[in-house]
Length: 326
Ligand code: DAH
Image (cartoon, rainbow, N blue to C red; front, side, top):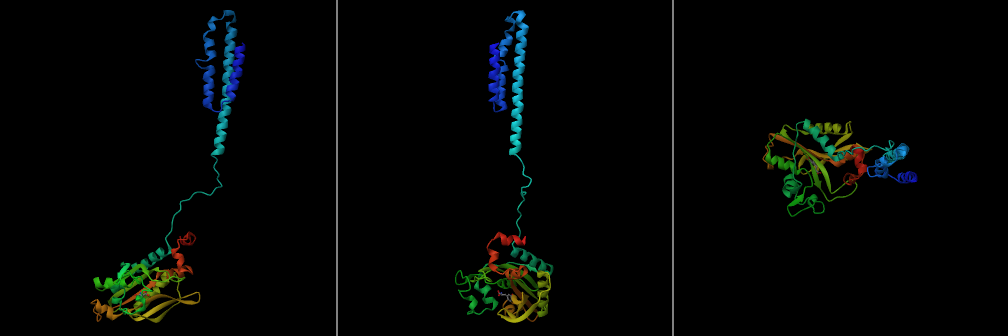
């Protein structure tokens, strides 16, 4: 009897110090399992006199029931504790901002190039590319730029050696294309050009776009029309523009096109009728063919498009700047 009472106390002690259901399982097998004291006692019950046997039997059954109850109660308590813990740990805060996929956007220069290309593609222009490392023949000589012209100066041009340079203008593409193709010619070209300049309106590298048309009976009106239509398309509204007489060695006559922007005239495009000397040098018959050409700085156009006041923003990789154009 006293053994059994002691047993109950031991069980209570072990159970209450159990921290997990696995520990409880061990307590269970220790006190009720095959090798437990109670099980052995049960097996020896036939040794007890018949008079006392049912009393002792009941006693053993009762204590077994009590032990089972104690363990079970604690088990329920433990399971609830585990559940509560995991609920608080795994709580989802629905007020937190969601995780979204970050999708990049196009650089404003890239999307301008795509837009410009689309406009000229619809007019049957083909897009050709040239070389960023050019020779002085294609960049200067063949464009009728005199040998002592200041733009050839090493203060303006990145020379790689005496004859090789980083192209200063995409106009060199005109020469390369006319050398290998006969009129009718209708091309545009986009590319990086390099000049030794750095301030709020100039960077040592910027993007130019070049256009060239050579065909029968091409005249200044064709040029003016295409420029008008192009600028209306690009800015999506009618801008005030003016054609101003100018000079380029490779066109005659030459003009610059200015756009009215915030009450200032901004020069955006150089253009003109291709100089006959250039056509002749490339074996194009000037009695039959004439042409016009134009060149523009893409950064300059995009600055007007979005009211950007410093060209250097384009190349700083500042996300706060870039994200505005998504
Ligand atoms: N290449 C000139 C520049 O970089 C721009 C230009 C002017 C291009 C007149 C042309 C043109 O094709 O006809 O300033």
